[in-house]
Length: 59
Image (cartoon, rainbow, N blue to C red; front, side, top):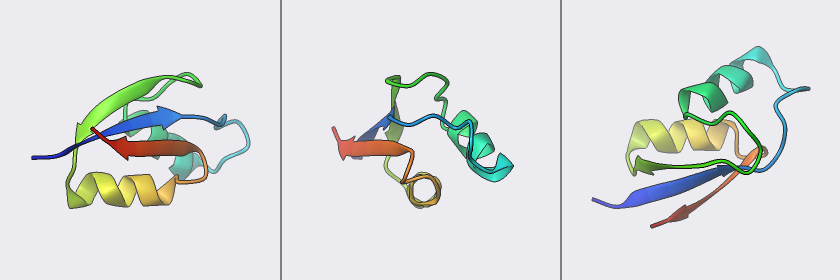
């Protein structure tokens, strides 16, 4: 199964509570931090929700 490397590139300070919660659920806390997640529909939906705050690529 493919994996996705997700990196937080913008702050969540001025984001809505839902976006902050999504970023936290992805396991991201600091700008520049990266995590690897399995590529599935649930994760893709979360990434789509906060796409303006993160970058992601297939690993």
